[in-house]
Image 1: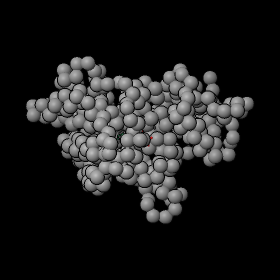
Image 2: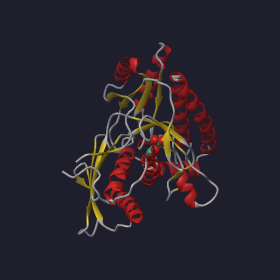
Image 3: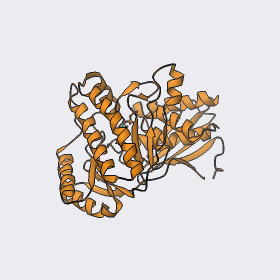
Image 4: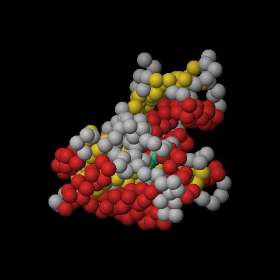
Length: 337
Ligand code: 2P0
């Protein structure tokens, strides 16, 4: 086994995060600069473990995802990311990357967030870059926007960053950081109603939404207010306010996609059935609030004390799916060995 943090080889683990204020839309595709600030909770489930070791003799990078050699777009994205790390480190060596996901890839459960957060931490260490969490967040962002938030545990806000000035200034200013929160003791009940890959990638969908949806700008504007209110609700430990803001922000994001031309619709009949069950829970006095990402699956925010009841209601609503209960999880970190 390698020593911890030994240059040349490193292994890191990262968890997915679920946005309560969504990232949707880029203002710079190359630098992965978003149009809006976003805020998320990192989960304690579905970690990705990634090992990077340098292969000085090799003429190309090798990327193995869940035991299968990556090709096409998936390979291209990892190689482009490693190129960025190599450029910073001044080391030209190719690498071998092994990554194991425990989340269904492409199902709107943010495997790219845990994936690029783990890759950023492992690759930086393997190439001998000494980066703090802010710099790792900035680096992870270049792989996938939402990965910037998975560098941190618990609640994190990803700053869209400066608009004026140079590209370098914008790049420097766009990273995540932890968000202060009172003890909410939250749970996130994840209802996987469809674990298959999505029809339209979030990258393509957000581009089309920004380019063609008449609802995009109004949502982006209201999202700023949502973020201000969300920060206050987190500080106050007000889970009902946190949930209400998260739910309306997510529904608004989906509205922007539905209004895109052609429409992007990730919500399925099973999604709506689960949303109905969440409404019924609220009518019965259980604070439970839904959020959905670039897929049909539903994540329900509630108090940890109510999680079993919420999970049962969601399971009854979507009998074909799988349901699990997540809690706030840790930030990305290096592993020994
Ligand atoms: C989010 N999503 O805030 C939003 C909500 C999906 C819906 O971040 O193009 O995979 O790699 O920067 O991070 C999914 O987008 O997109 C995402 P890229 P990413 O979690």
